[in-house]
Image (cartoon, rainbow, N blue to C red; front, top):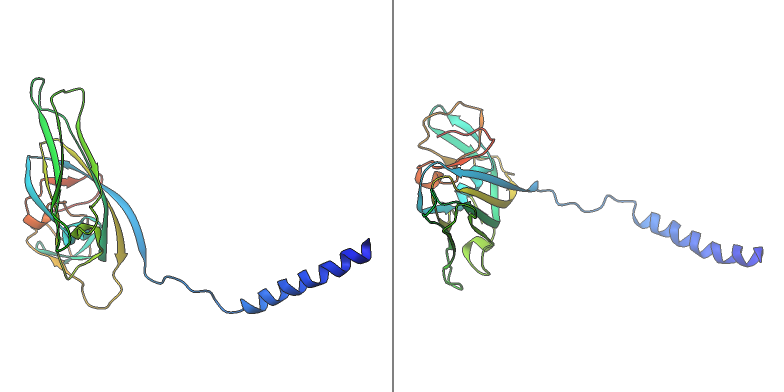
Length: 212
């Protein structure tokens, strides 16, 4: 019995040895720095047909000051939107609250709106939706495009979550900048408002250092 076990073990040891020889080189890696994160915002005022662009999504993920009290540069080069979630209560009993997201279509997709309304202070209006297939927001976007991803409507006090996937900058030149800000220190990191595209700064990031 021992001899039989010994004869069977030899091919197994040889196979393991050959596998080790085949793996003497380092394996492939994905060299780009890639990450996902959910960002939260609170509406300090009524949000009406607010355009959210791909560069605005890059801006909420982090920027760095390049011109004093004026301009920041994006830290990420590419973005893909995973989903948007919104909660909103009525301002008072007997009132109502409506939240909506309209996904911008493309050549192969119509624009599609998702909406919800509440008439009770005990229950929020609530939507959670991902970009429809073939909409602009369903594709990766680079900072050079600055495409409009969706439009947002929600009342004051709404909470907005935006989940995105990001690719870090990997080139020597500045990818893109956001100007029109009034408080910027060179070299300092800022997480921008979701509505930076129109410089309204109503959708303020929660628990992150920001600037307007």
